[in-house]
Image (cartoon, rainbow, N blue to C red):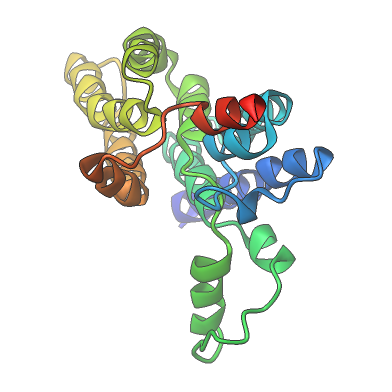
Length: 235
């Protein structure tokens, strides 16, 4: 029972921090509602395209802190429980993707039909609470949880972004590679098995939320990193 309660506490910590809509507030500093531009997400890529580099930098800093802080808190509060900081990672990613705060900020959709609570609350959260994809938050959370994984993957993922110039391709590269690399660390005994299970879950989340990007890549309509900003500056 204690393990279940501490794990729930870790997940709650992760969700509360992850759900903070950094990108939304960063865009507002430049009088831009990023939900009304591009993909409609509040993650760094869409903030860059719609509000510029200043808002992007603020968003990335905030998204990194959203991942690091709950993991460190969960580890400090429950030092004997490997599961608590691990589920804090998942909580942060889910909070970043489906933020209760963004759902509350959004105006009610008169055309939407939801079931009775509590199912209706979940439906509205899924419909109107879309945040970012959560790659920066997941990377930061994993850096706090198990630094070797991120430090090894950082250079090749950045190389993919620089060469290909599609943020979605770099994100998918990280999502596919991370569980494979973490499995190696678990096999060596350097990381607990629960970390691998958590990484698989989060990688699946990252891949699922990138399905629209995958479709755009196949159609040749996916925008390159920073492309919209560059076009706007030339006008």
